[in-house]
Length: 255
Ligand code: CIR
Image (cartoon, rainbow, N blue to C red; front, side, top):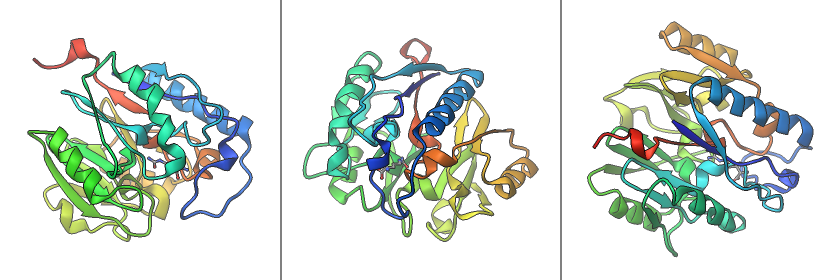
């Protein structure tokens, strides 16, 4: 598995914030946490490829929002926050080596953080960042996938509220998303509000050290959990999935 990441920019203090109060961000500590995250991805079997740094783009470390990658193609998004739209240029360049490219065009908006794919099913959060037109365009690009628009409330992105933690298991915060939407999955509910964003990599789950009670629930369900410190990055309203894009190398894909 290839993990695309992007260096943490020194301008991160000027990031977009929607549900959080602005707090000072220690860039040195945030950078250390980001490096530890990249090391954890390597330990989980990923080849980490860093997209060119964008020091003047405060949210550029949150690379997940700039694209949606499936086996067949990569869809370059049009992020909902206007301040983030230029982030896609370098990501598109990196992805062009790995997949055919499609794009979300105006007036559509879509953030990758709103897209949860499990096999051929794709849930897309109709959030403050992603609009119906963005979802319609994504559905057109993802022919053969079952693309479902879902409402999220009280959080930034769909994947703030629900992520995949096992083949048929999702971790979810029922305050922010309806459980009933995922009735055909096994569900684990968070024990801490911001704990629903976990990153499943090669059968193991990367998870923030800040949420031990939710971690315990995952482990009780037989899930192998690797923790990383991510509290400094969390002050920019970013979680773990946001900091990478996982891409199956073209030569390892089923034909
Ligand atoms: C933003 O508001 O766009 C950034 N400060 C945080 C983005 C986090 N991305 C994600 O959850 N996928």
